[in-house]
Structures are given as C-alpha cells and as structure tokens.
Amino acid sequence: MTRSRPLIGVTLDSEAAIPDGSGYSRFPWYALRCNYMDAIADAGGLPVALPHRADLAAAMLARLDGLVITGGAFDLDPVLYGAGRRHDSVTLKAGRTQAELALAQGAIASGLPVLGICGGQQLLAVALGGTLVQHIPDEVAAPLAHEQPNPRDQAGHEVDILPGTLLARVTGATRIAVNSAHHQAVRDPGRAAICAVAPDGVAEAIEYPGHPFCLGVQWHPEFAISLADRHIFSALIEASGSR
Image (cartoon, rainbow, N blue to C red; front, side, top):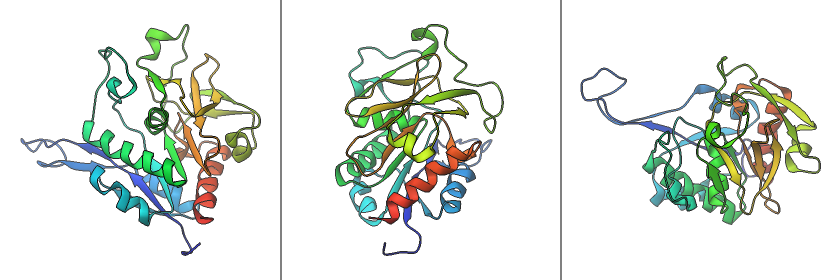
C-alpha cells in the first residue's frame, strides 16, 4: 500500500438545472449523502468524488485504489441489457449511467476493488452481461415492500446470504436485516453470481468470482444498520489497501 489510507472513488448523483431558482441551483449540480463518504472514511479509506466524465474513466481509475458505485432514484436504460421495451416506471440519467458503466467496466477489467450499492449493484450486473427486472411489483409474486415505507436508517426486511460466497466471508453471517429502497432488481447476474436473496426470491447481492473484490448489494450499507454493513466497507478498504 503506497498510502496510509487507500483512495476510494465514489460516484455522484446529479440533478438538472432549475432555471427559476426554486431548487439548489440554477445550474446542473452533483449530490451525495454524507454517509457514503463517512462510511468509507470510518473504515479507513480516503473518499474522493468522481464526476460524470466517461472520457476520464481510465485516468481516474489509474489513480484509485478502490471504487464505490452509489445508488440513486433512477434506472438503467433497458436497451443496455437487451430489453425490448421500457416499463412506464423507468426514469433515466444517461450521462451518469455512461460514466458509471465506463468506471465499472474498467474496474472489472483491471481487478480494481469495487462495491456497487443499490442501483450500483444493478449497474455491476449489467456491466457483467446481466439483465434486470424493470418493476418488481409487476414480475414478482407476493413481493416484499422493497421500497420500504419506514426510514432508510431502519431495516425493511431480511436477506439470506449464500454459504461459501465472498459476502458470507465478509459478513460472517447467514442472514441479516437490511434497508430497502428499490423497485428494480437483478434478474440474470450474467458473469456474476447471486450471493444473497430476499424471502420473496429477489436477488439482494451479487459478486464476481475470480475478481479480487467485486461485490454488489441491493441495500444501503452506508447507513450501518448492522455490523455486517460495517464489515462490507472494511472488506472493501482492506482489498483496496492490499493492491
């Protein structure tokens, strides 16, 4: 490790300009909840925000020791995973997706440790050749409330962690309570493998076997509602610091 704290790139959300001045800015702006950065720093990493510049993805990755792809209230374009139609509930942020795909694909190819959170897990699945369920209520029989009504810093449901997986080794658990804020899910993980599932069968975590550390979780471990959530960030920092 060349630095006392491994440098962890964190992707940002983005919002369009609001010309009438009723929002944060009259010009386009980036956004990120503080707890993403705090979770990385508390685990021993040095977080740094990454702009939505797909053309700079390789240059950014060359400076980083690890990568976190964050969540957000938007979806991937179904065209990216070969779907013939787009569900009415799907909303897009094309510039963000293009940048995050470039980062994810570069991290996967180079062996850079990467953690995908919520929508970041779905993006990892697509980057690895997978497909998505576009709207859980339309495709899953008797689904859980994956868009939980209670606050995000509380648990919404439990997930079962598959034995022998990276996630099982990292968390030391077979079942954990998680917070849930998504209407889509991984259908086919592509070259990845599903490593946790909800009681209704929805995929809750994926990992890429053979990669030093490539993990996606459908929940939000940055809220640290369980010890397992803290272990996930600690494992990312450990993998990033050992490169």
